[in-house]
Length: 314
Ligand SMILES: Nc1ncnc2c1ncn2[C@@H]1O[C@H](COP(=O)(O)OP(=O)(O)OP(=O)(O)O)[C@@H](O)[C@H]1O
Ligand SMILES: [Mg+2]
Image (cartoon, rainbow, N blue to C red; front, side, top):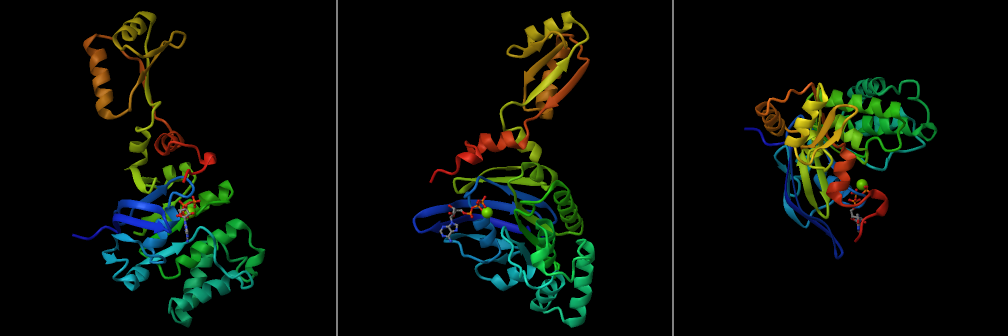
């Protein structure tokens, strides 16, 4: 049995007297993408820094590919790549020089370094800009270079802290394609993001961090069912059918013009079965049915209990 790519138990981190992580538990299966969501200051970057051995936790355990982050940091470092929230590349060097520097730091050897850097420049669409100083790069080019730097040594577990912040829609999609390509080749990804559509697009599972703990974890669809506002919309052939259904399903709201009835529901298969069985028993035919699940923004607000602009009370 292989260990999960990331396995975190009761992680605790305190800065002075401020408890940032208060018992975080998280498991990420190999070859999957998990998005870590949470309001500003929730501890997402802190979590990623602990998992990538940059800082130490007060207590708890964390394993990357079975390597303990506190007992075997070298083993962990050999397995991971980290692209940080704030880029840390040298603005005076060219993109190519930055990549070569990273390749040499990773002990790739001169020849292997050259080929790997050429591959990455090609893959990240940076061939034309390769020889230009980084100071002249746009935000999107810098982000791509950041990620290319991380991939010099082909890590098996990749941490991406807000990989697309500040990118335009096209560059975000390019970045998403790159991440999908990596995952298709077996890389495991843990990413943080403030863009809930990004989590929806990329993540197999989402974990929501708030108040020092994971307050919810599941697939994007599972999480959406947690937020209020989910309903099933039923359309009927005629007014008598609508009337009958409206009497049967108390609490539903009707739209007479559209011959539709909105019934509160989490949209799960079980709930749909029960609903349709009730209508069937009453011999009411349904013409059309659609499920409306809340989007991740609804989920985020419902779970973290405040909007981002209100900040974190601490
Ligand atoms: N070196 C430090 N010393 C003291 N407090 C710190 C330090 N680093 C982080 N913190 C605090 O820990 C908390 C979590 O910070 P962290 O950067 O992990 O949050 P985050 O979820 O990544 O937020 P954001 O969405 O803004 O990136 C914040 O309250 C922050 O002020
Ligand atoms: Mg952060």
